[in-house]
Image 1 (cartoon, rainbow, N blue to C red):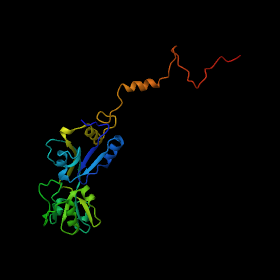
Image 2: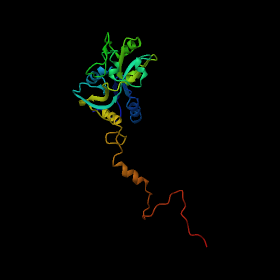
Image 3: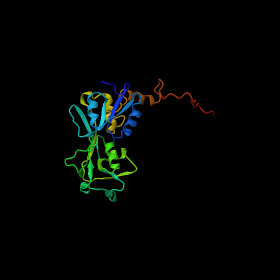
Length: 242
């Protein structure tokens, strides 16, 4: 098993839109001797990368094939519709799927939202990526529903977005191969779950044998008679002369 305290590196994959900065910063503070390597990867490829040994853990968008993987669901994102700034839906602060019934809705091949029924009208094409779909929205070819973080990632000044209240949502999870749960993986799990440095699965606290030694060192030294020794910087008072 990899030593979770010193040496080696930790490789962390993450899907587009996921921002691992806060966890990476905590890792850097707690584990200065273990560099963390970030591996950006398309959402559909996170699981394959983990199974091929290309990363130690990863942030993926659910649902995924969980066979052989451990998964910790983290948070759910609001789904938004990306539209040109002059689109009719911008008159409202939030919309529903029914409000998009007459719009052509782009469905990129890397879509991260699991739909039971696609909203709106089918667009004339299925772009390969969300980035290409955003370009098509800008050209007036349709609208796009994505997790809010992806709308921010692909921000353009000529586009805006609105929350879609009743749309399915995307959930982000931390995942890793179960049979490769190393000490480093356990350390990262602790960081993601907000454990403190001295928690049972965080960085190793001082052993019980060390603590009494520190307490003993704080006690004043005693001389052979059982009396407290006088510090060398202080003089013992003699009898005051009469």
